[in-house]
Amino acid sequence: MTTASTTATAYWEPLWSQGRRYRQLDDSENQLLEQHLGAGRGRLALDIGCGDGSLTRRLNEIGFRPTGIDCSPSAVALAAAQDPGPGRVPVWQCMDFTTDDLATLPEPAYPVITCRLVYRWIDDKAAFLDRVRRLLAPGGTFWVVTEITGRRPATDPLQNLGITPAQAELLTTGWSAVRTADLDVLRCYALRPCPPCDLMEDR
Ligand SMILES: C[S@@+](CC[C@H](N)C(=O)[O-])C[C@H]1O[C@@H](n2cnc3c(N)ncnc32)[C@H](O)[C@@H]1O
Image 1 (cartoon, rainbow, N blue to C red):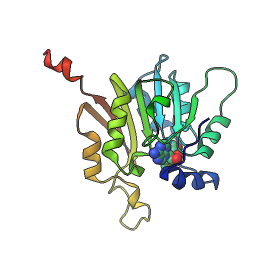
Image 2: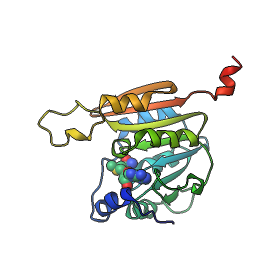
Image 3: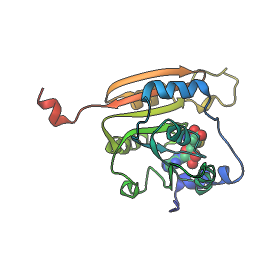
């Protein structure tokens, strides 16, 4: 396992190592995931900011061959410790997705890329989305789960966990298909890339 040493690591590693944990997947979210991604059928998947691995494990269970990456060594260690033993298990890798060399990933492209409760925390969202597009295979799906603003009462101290309309606009611009599904305070996005320019010119 390589170790990242970045601003993101400096923020997240103390949280994970001191016991902070995040919302787990439930049946409703699992259903939406399968509705939008389908069964894995052995396809590769990359889960960015996997934390302790709940989404990565779910992808593995429904037949994907997932890699979970996170900038926090403690999170990656927690994820790997939950591997169920013999059988196909996810690949776990410690890296900062925004700064580390993408060539260190096990594969050059992924038909499914996921990112759950992470987008909100990325400073340079445009650069982040560029990196995702570089890795997303043609015809693939980028699955994003994020809280959006305006879902909590104005007095809720966690109100700022939601992304703003401008951040949502940035997320959803430049894809050939955008599908969304709402889940209490969360919104799930299934984003499909535009065909490469040379294909479009043939039309
Ligand atoms: C709120 S947690 C969500 C964890 C997990 N996706 C889940 O749904 O339980 C956000 C995660 O994103 C990771 N993260 C944030 N910035 C990152 C980056 N630049 N590269 C890799 N991981 C990052 C954090 O370490 C943390 O584990």
